[in-house]
Image (cartoon, rainbow, N blue to C red; front, side):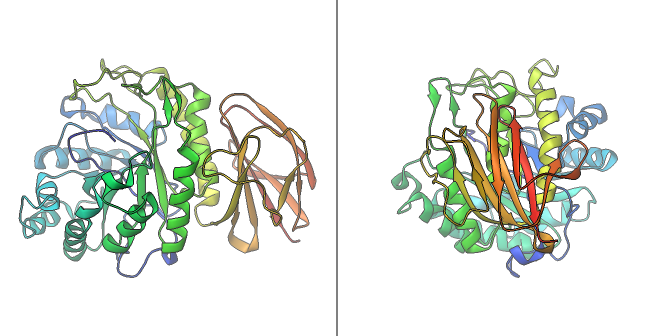
Length: 415
């Protein structure tokens, strides 16, 4: 994100084999069957109430992030207590971590951080830094290691820049080098970045490319990844429709992301450098139309993401005009889109539990999609209902309809 403060993000859960032994907490401080969904910017101190945190819970979020205006030991403890009451977890922001991460404070001060928060039942983990340059990775690794040593039950999080930043500014040979060096140096529990591609002047054209390189590095380095996507209008970022909101989420799922965060939940009222509008909760404390939109999307993402959570991304392709970072359908694809002029979609497939092949169709946001898909590689074909959370049989050649930005999940197995 574009703040001068050190920000943070929540985490993502995956089956234990995706984590290196040196990076995994000794116990998971979250429900391993929930697909992680969170946000930037919790309510400010004045609005940190039980009612407000229940409102977060009701919107389908599984974790809470700190207020974007900063936090204190007292406010962090209040947030953790509120989360415990409504059944959520929280990442905390502490100035001692920020100072240690930038070399302005002592590493030994992190011992007090772990002591102050580590035993709270609502703690998810610690925020370390947001959008660091590659030359900061060794210092961040030291902070990560110290927190892990002092509190092995909880994780720490660092969020990275998107691919719109030039490699020389990132202090890296390439964007992929930037991501890979981060993972190999810091050994994070997840690889996270933010990308806000839906601009007032038009799409930046690099959203899929960012997903593709994050997916590749995550798979090769055996670490999950997730994506921070936009809700709020500010600067050059436009006010989004429901289809544009869902598009970001479903494209991320199709490309293998294992968790999502929305930017932002609460309007960043501490930052007057931007004209913030249409966050999930507006500056006056009232829900924006985006609140109900994201609430509904979160429910579908939780359902579909739960089915994909313990599955491994195998490959993907795009239909229609191939975007930067995209690819045409490979010959070994388990599905064929029969129409010559197929609607623009991303199709990703996964190896799931019990030798099932899971195929996710994620539509573009511009218009509905109606197409015929022909499946191969199995004798039992089923489509998932994200509302009822049930599977129903479909024919090997099936007609599928998708609303703008929506997704359809199909399972192919041998009987």
